[in-house]
Length: 255
Picture 1 (cartoon, rainbow, N blue to C red):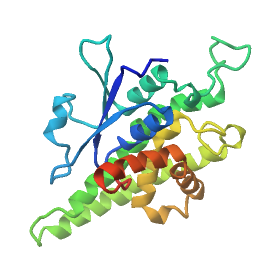
Picture 2 (cartoon, rainbow, N blue to C red; picture 1 turned 45 degrees about the vertical axis):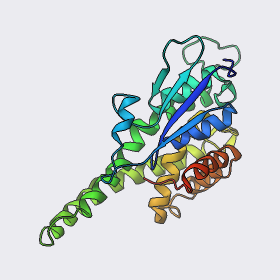
Picture 3 (cartoon, rainbow, N blue to C red; picture 1 turned 180 degrees about the vertical axis):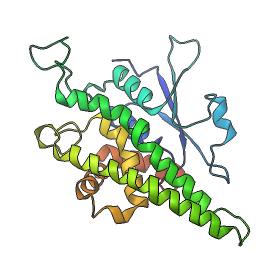
């Protein structure tokens, strides 16, 4: 584990973004860190200042400064950030045991919990999040400030895309998560078993924000709804929210 005494960790946090899950992770790791917050522009895009930290100008981004580095280490992409911090700052408790006893190093010798962990670390951004982002974009099309005689057209297009493509895919993913929670190792109640893992932290914001925006789906997917509520009741999650409330005055997980 890296000595945190002379290590400075800075999280660049953008409002209404998935950077909040990194705050939660840092709280779970119980290591000192600094948060620099950014507001979205009027068009809801990230401010240009973030490009000074990483060329893509996205959030979350984490920088790590140590006495051994001539320049800060810059980490982008949530899964990369989570895995790097867990590796270097005592996150073993958030990663399931990799191999079943006696099967170390064997192909197929991994535990179900670890295989789930690996899958969900990448599923969140690769499979689920794109449809949630599409939902936000299509809502923007529906409510675009266009002339009144064009508005019925934009609303019709938005509704057709949403009804034929976006909503069915979101519901497919929620049904999938409902099943994965029911069949979690040891009966759950988390994705990989009876304890939270970094994969739960990775998934948390998307699930919580989705059910907040699409509250009518809670009754259709009670297992996912209970899971989202369970995550928000964890002390580390609540401490992370409190950090942002202290800085920004309020916090809401939203798409």
